[in-house]
Image 1: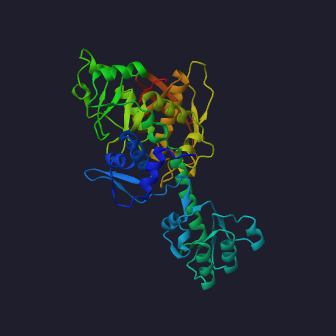
Image 2: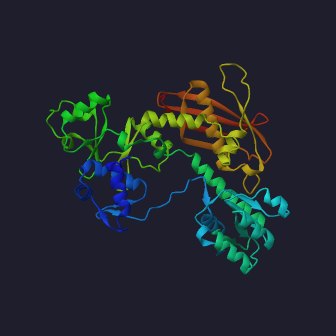
Image 3: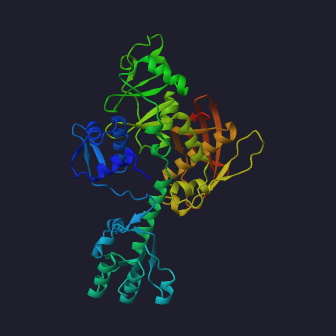
Length: 442
């Protein structure tokens, strides 16, 4: 099977020395390919971490970075998290932690749980330390105990780290479990990079194109809004049907485009971009890299669909405090079909402050969740809270069962206002006025 020109360029880039400059024209000339083919290959090399574009310097060859999956931790990351000390097996620090095991069992029982990628948390039991290393598991020594030269030698030979900490086993296990939990929560937050159209799927125009090129693209795609880039593929504008109205087809795009457009980056949350696009009536936003080169686009329809999916998704056994609050809300049957239901909630120890009363942030989250559910039940649409004014009448104690009663005061095409009453035993203890933005149906 013959190698493609695209793969040939990637191989050529990988062979270049770190720190060397790379250009589209230079690669096109060296490998006898078109500048378009060279540009696409360089962009992929940037995506996989072979090169980096630095403003006023250009594109240079860099050391390829190994991107770990967000839901996993390396043993090296564990060392940082627990502020531990690496005694041996440093070559294994980049390996991924699969699970951790507490070595409080007999050797025969421990063998049942040992798998490659495990982390054995143990004290000064040398036989367990050796057993773990010989079965592909790294070792975390708690209590600050010393380790024998034999164990250190085995760790270096099998390239698995031995980490030492002065903390006790329970504390260390709690810290690692929390780190894994935090990474899983981050994984569930949808960002622009998850749903954007990539550059190879994106229609865009150049500053040197004319309105005739714009009209041809409209006829081909059916869209009317396109990013505009300069010779270096940097985003410089947006062109829409409004910009080209009553203009000659021979005019250059750069003369009529809207300059300094809004843009998104891959790491931004979809919720923030959807909020911006809905409120400002923007159909499409370009996605750019750090050097403002075009990387793709995100549409308002795509953003809203993602928000609707995330708001409808039920997280089973969620680790975030927000998930615990949302899952604790219980919908009560309303007195009449036309009325909105009342929601009940039990204030648990995790939801209170140092004085034993419900935390301010927890009550705000409850009110936001009830707002979302009320609008969804009454108008079959989704919303984002923009403003909430909360008034406390009485402190809400731990173990209190509260009722939260929503009432829609005003509902319009783009926004809604609600009154949320919080009651204990039919007595009002807090009240909120909430203003939210309505997310249009896709």
